[in-house]
Image 1 (cartoon, rainbow, N blue to C red):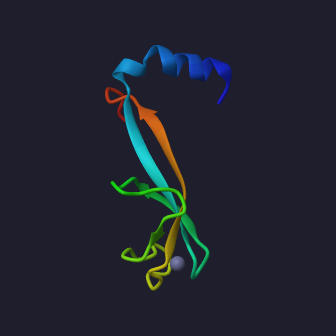
Image 2: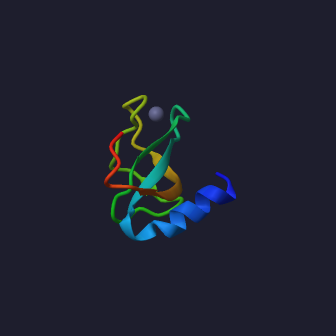
Length: 77
Ligand SMILES: [Zn+2]
């Protein structure tokens, strides 16, 4: 992302919607993947009640990172 992009985001911020994501890491197969942020998520939290998306057997996921992005609700992908 360059400076021009950031300027554009700030200009249009009022019509953008914040989408939060959590990056999970599986301690079994070492896979990392992103899913939608859930209430209560925080970095380095251990998720013992969720299955790994990749190997489906581990219930020992850790939140590596939480990030948000701004989506334009009028723009369709
Ligand atoms: Zn796994």
